[in-house]
Length: 508
Image (cartoon, rainbow, N blue to C red; front, side, top):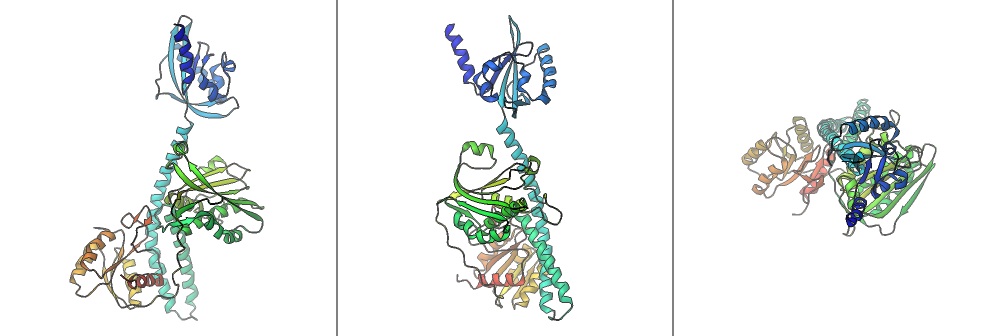
């Protein structure tokens, strides 16, 4: 019996939950070690105190009534069917708890037993899940809108450029045409940001050294933030390599720097840091979608105005902005979010009003060596050609535009409004067809499936895919598959002709 009396306190103190017992008057008569850890009180401080002392002021009156009802008509709440309440630590900090109740009748009267679990990690994950689902839904909508707009912008900007080519230099209509083209280009930039946010933008990642990439952007960063803001780079030595699209990573850093600049209108300090980081199982449990492992952290910090919790909860949503009208589209941080997530990384923000903001971006660390920088393609006007090109596009306006662009460069064009029509045209055409130029997403079958049928029949044929957004038929998670040639809408006549010549002139 004496052995059991010693065993019971040991069992209570080894429990992962806080366990308390209260008498009929609601005063604490028993508390285990986890209760001390969870609430910050010692057991002598707890014993004899009303249970309501562990609740925030706002919840106490309702709890007294609930506790009185419970003692009068006791009912058990098993684990997993507990009450979600707010707990209050000794220092005043509030945190979410789940309380499961039991009831014990003794010679000394009835006692209530409460099992209390700190559910802060669960609540945090629930909030992240809701936010992630909301962002996914908005992303799907944004991607679909961007896809439709890109088809329209391809037609507008394509014909407008051809119109400008035909107008004499002295024509008074040139100014009007150039303004239309500028507006189309601005609209294309916005839809491109929507595609990045929705993670439907084609990425061309390569292994890069994180420090080298940040250092290469330093000159541009100083121009962006201006002389009133001090730029400080704290780059950890040998931080490691990451696999990203270099241009898109620069866009992440620039967008974060611009937001930091705008949060320091009177000047301040912008700090960019790199450091190796290991995100363990505990971190992954509280950060949805993160895989444990080695990462490279890039942090962008400012000592500006900071943000409250409500603002922080919306900052990655497209078109959300705290800036004055006309001073921001609300797509900068949405773009950052899309790039980081599409690259397999994670982003976290720490901010308080008046205390500045820190964005921490994590990219998986790669053991491979950094690749050499790709040489830029020649920007000169593309060469003409005489080959036969089969254009497959279900959007009539885009189909006619592409055909006209190609004819102006001397190509022979076959047009098909659907994959089935394209298969039939290929059968009827006696001569060679050097290139299949096809939209990605179409009725009946995808552009990739069409190519899978045509290319074995015509060994000389090469394929170039066009799309206003990416689909898994051409890319995997937004990353271009090896050997796949892709041109995003909208595109210029020179870009199209240049890409075609690049593919056709490449040795087999």
